[in-house]
Image (cartoon, rainbow, N blue to C red):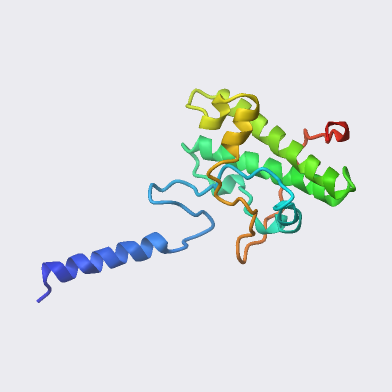
Length: 177
């Protein structure tokens, strides 16, 4: 005979096991939302090496990552991260900046431009925009650079980013450094 307490314990363990299971490419939280760690940290002298050397170890968000409907705000976040990682690649490759201080300046410009474009896309929808997008100037950048999911740009263990097309639209301004 099975007791109610034993059966309840079984179901709790089963649910916890399924919740923690990796059942495909898309990671989801308890609300079944795609896991898109956002916002990305502002490039600094302390995290620049990780930005440049671990770029292929950080997630990219292909369209197949997201469910077909809803979750458009997560899709915009994923697009912003893909765009930013593409632009970081330009900065770190030596194509647009040669010296380390220029590489950092380039990465910071890419970060601001990618997040500015993200905010424009947020306001182009009829949903509530990401909270930092309401701020202007310096306050916006402080907001985006707080409560970060990955401030050091650590790579995801055993992850290699899939190839994604280079994002157009970024031009490094060396005179702004």
